[in-house]
Image (cartoon, rainbow, N blue to C red; front, top):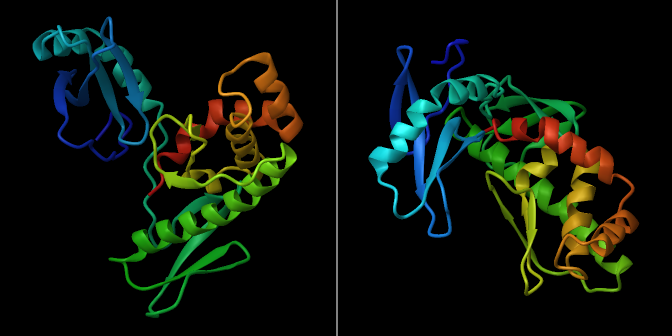
Length: 241
């Protein structure tokens, strides 16, 4: 429990540092390309992430993390509380709030009626059912926009897959394969539209040059709004589920 009394999910197999009688979870990563130690906050798992060069020991890294404990605690306490996919919880969907409502019916799909998502099953299955529904809605919305944006640059719709990354909302590989966070369906539709435009633009410019941004602006009118929204609100989406 944090200093603000908010229960948070612990990351998998974290190391702990103690600060003012509080255990702080720290996940360590090795990076061969790293030149120095870095710390960041993983909003999804509510922990600090310590990246170490290969030549730095775990003990040295944890000593570095302890020296930054005040910074870690401050940023962890700024995270939104974790909200499970459970009966009675309110979650974002395409920029609005919907209420999860469980009903004991087996063998049917969730139904969105107004601002209420009626979810069949039980308390044991509701989280997975809601997540699967959100992923399917995300896939549907993304498929439409990928096809539209690709047509605007005279390309066939490329394949894409859904992921649940901690730091990226979308990506485009050198062989024109796209990835998107399924959580985009919880953001305003303008944000999803922008992320699709950003990744489809990479099909013509696999960089972040002025030409690339000109393509993005041609594909969507929402770039400025979406960037600001993701900067200020994006991390909150990682706290659901």
